[in-house]
Each structure stands twice: as C-alpha cells, then as structure tokens.
Image (tube, rainbow, N blue to C red; front, top):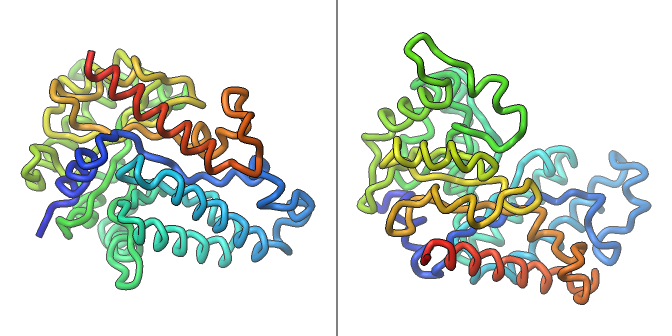
Amino acid sequence: MKYFIDQLQQKIEEKNSRICVGLDPHLELLPENVLAPELLNDLESNQKEIAASVLKFNQNLIDAISDMTAVVKPQMAFYEKLGVPGMDCLWQTMSYAKSKKLLILLDGKRNDIGSTAKAYAESYLEQKNIAADSITINPYLGKDGVLPFLENKEKGAFALLRTSNPSAVDLQDLKLDDGRKVYQAVGAFLQEVGSNYIGECGYSNLAAVVGATYPKELKEIRAQLKSVFFLIPGFGAQGGGAADIKAGFDKNGRGAVVNSSRGINFAYRKEEYNNFGAENYAKAARAAAEKMKNEINDVLNQ
C-alpha cells in the first residue's frame, strides 16, 4: 500500500512539476465554439447540453496539460450547479483524468460530525467505479470530522488552514487566549492529527490549504509545520506570483503544489496568449501551464 502523499510526491518528481491545475468551468468564460452562449439564457432547461460542453472542454484541457502536472482539482460547485448532468460530467471528468494517470484532488470543502464525515469520505474517496484520490475538507468540527477522510491511507485530505480570500482575516486572524491566532492553532492541530499518517516522503496524508496571497504567513506556517504538505491556491488570477509561493516549500523544493484554475483554463482570454484564439484554448492552456511550471521551478532553484 502506497500512501497518497507518496503517490503525489512521486508524480511531482517524475514530471518535475509542482503545479496543480484547477478545473473550474466558469460557464461565461468558455469559448463559443465549445458552449453556445444562448444556452446560458436558460441554465435549468439546458443542463444536459451545457454539461456535455463542459466535459468536452475539460477533456481537451486534460489532454493538453497531462504531462505538465501531477494533479488536477475540479471545483465541485461548478458541476453541482448543473444538477444531475453536471455531477455526471464531474465523474466523467475524473475518470478521464485518471485515464491520463493524473491524481484527483476534489475541491468541495466537505465535512460534518463523525458519521456524516464518514459518509462524505465513502461517497467521494471510496466509490468502486470512480473516486477521487483526495478531497478538501473543513477542519472546524475537530478530530472526529477529520479522521474518516484518513482511514484509507491511499487517500488524502487537504484541510483549510489559511485561505487566500481577502476576508480570511475576519476569523483566521482572531487571537486566542494563549496569544496564537486561530490559523496557527489549526495548523498545530493538523500536524498533531496527521502525525499518524506520515508517508515515506516525510509528509502526511493530512495536508493543508495555505493561500499564496499571504506570503508572510506562508513562510511562518511552513516553519511551524514540518510534516504538513500544502496546497497553495491564489496563484495568477487571485494575485499570487512565483516569488510569493517559494516560502511554502522546504529547502529541497518539496512539500507543496501550487494551484491555478482560471489562469490556465482560460489563458486564451489573456493578452499574452490571444494569438492562439478561442479555437485553440487548450494550446493556450498548455502554454500557460508550462510557463507556470517553469516559473516555480526557477524560483525554487535560486
């Protein structure tokens, strides 16, 4: 049995890539040659047709970037809004990514009390036909809401720690009686709980989400949490750059993957890649993924 975190680290090293490609199909940003804009005028009635367009879009993206990344991260909200056809699109997207030997990080921020957390884990990590390799979770319910996601050591969980949104400070920066901030206490909790799930690479199957938009805190959290692997969102569209994320890695350039969704999915809409045109959106996505991969590697090698 190979721990999830060891599988991830191995694929990162094989591809020499520390990027995670989010699959977030913002419908209004899809190229017109993939999704006819008029279908969006009645989302509910056109769910099946829209979901089919999203699947085509995703499959072409996966074909383009599969050698550039170890892991893809579908954001469930974009599929759930399309009802049953949308969820079918999600499963088919995951299946297609699996066929390309990619790991799946399902982004749904799931959790609840112990028995319900177990049901979530069984739903998304243990299905026989298609299951994710890992899932994002909310650690707010404590240990009994985290452990069910770690029962299968071939699977992993990424718990929210220091998120990339501007209003994260509203709660995550609150000070506790012992002088620590909330996110610091959560980090200590994750490292303790995850200590029983550490793979050969030295990192735990219980990983954390730490945003690129707070580089000072990212450096501090990396120093605090030696065995916690990071998913670093906020690169590109949310304002984080390669220099901002360097502190999230250890001295050997390990311990994290950096996510980009819109910056890669819809690169064809950026001036830098507009020479590709909407019809070549997948080629533009590949170019953006390659640039991100190289930028991060260059920063880590400095």
